[in-house]
Image 1 (tube, helix red, strand yellow):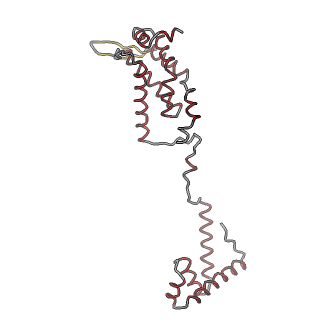
Image 2: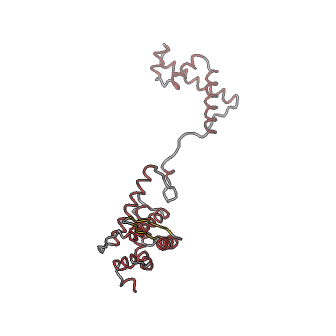
Length: 48
Length: 194
């Protein structure tokens, strides 16, 4: 528990950020995903 | 500079209308805050990365489906999604708790196994066996007192009552039993250390 409340951990939190690959994956996922509307129903399609 | 001017609401609207760059701006704007929030709860970079990814996958799907109601609360909405995913993660993990021993704190400094290892157990058994054989070499009266005192944990008063001799005699027999055992040990060079 001491570790969780130490100053070092709090400072450390300001420097953490996700990997660039994760962000890139999300942007690629977004580009590949399309939602098709069909008679009030929605279908998701992932197109590469 | 432009990123700071365009509000989240406009970017969300642009993204729903097909502008993929708007999503990139939104992610870059909020990634640090969302990720550090997740990391502050799970304290594991890989898990934080997974939850961050799942959060934005959910955001993307909701926006593309047109199921998002813009009320000027884009960031609180993302934080709520990540919060729910963190809870899901802990619920899953509680079913199968595990301890990550990679941090500064080692669980093995608290937990220890007092059981002897195989080698020490064998040595202990041998020692106990040697001591039993030494006791067998003692005269009957001394052996009787020693067994009652050391193995049955009886007091000299109880030994005296049981054997019908005085306490002093029982004490004397115990003393001679130990002296005789030491003599046998020295005579045969027996080593009784673990």
